[in-house]
Image 1 (cartoon, rainbow, N blue to C red):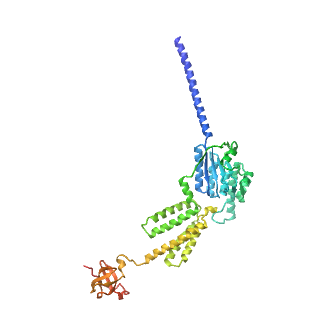
Image 2: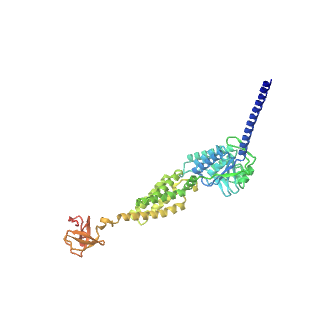
Image 3: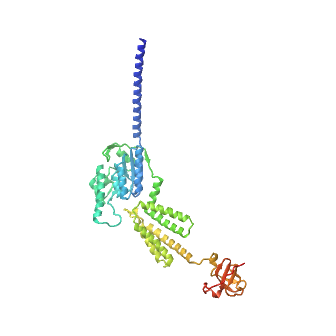
Length: 461
């Protein structure tokens, strides 16, 4: 009887223990779910600023920001945009990353006076939420032909390709497809209010918080068809800045900076070739040339312009050799200016070398290079004035009579000398040859005679 009661009590305890374990398990998962929900609600907004032409480093920067926002489970990525346009390939790469982003992307053209022109319009329309600040504008997205004039068929192909890209992006975002396409085909531009009224963007906002307040509680459809609602008002905003490498590359990818690096590098290498062993000019030249080459590799470069720059240095060298009183130097400067202006074939003026930069670099560089080359050429032509060869052709005075050996005074020094004729003391002589520590001399009156006549040499004792 007592044993049966104990079995019953142990069964009850087992059921109670199992209930407690299940309760604690459910409680644990409930707390874990609450934690993740709270973490999601308090996620930050990641913000980046693009205030430059669109180029490969811009695409890399935006791509890494999207990855960082996804890894941190941020609610959204805010891109503040101000750009005159840029390269088509980089624009397409950015659009691919934006539409595939696991985190909603808000693109906001700011501050007032900014623009999202050309490539910037494509990027703005690819956003989940497109917004502009008062006093901004967008549009003018007609593709620019690189390399000069192109035949009508190829031009039409490029326009149709760009228009199709615009339609595919805008249609998925529920915006005005026809008007967006007109910005591509007819280069139309729009103020922020025109863009809002004609459904090219969703919001006009004074600042970030104003934009977030307008956006709160309103749903929108993402590129993949999912409907999302964001509540970003008063949420913390975390800046995501470029890495040091990206900042350096962005700086040197300015075509003006790349041209300056190339010109200074070429001048430094020339200085090293004319003064072997100086080390510093050679090091500077190699570093600058490599930096310029890296930047130009990522930019649309006309290789014909590099031949113009090379031709300029050839003319500088010829000026030093033939002394044309500056004619070849002027020609070299002209070629250098033209080479600089044509070096980078960017689709917008901001991605080309400016005339003032080309002139400011080419004129001083041409004058300095021609001057250094003329000094080098003159130095090579001058007679050697040191060592044994420096004594040949010098005048001296006989200290003792030469019959045929004796002493002569040359360059403030007393030398053993021989002559093929007898020369009395105190006479002027000219040095014809140096044989160890003995000079072969002739009377000064015979200076112009050939030094190849047979002579006898006697070494000093």
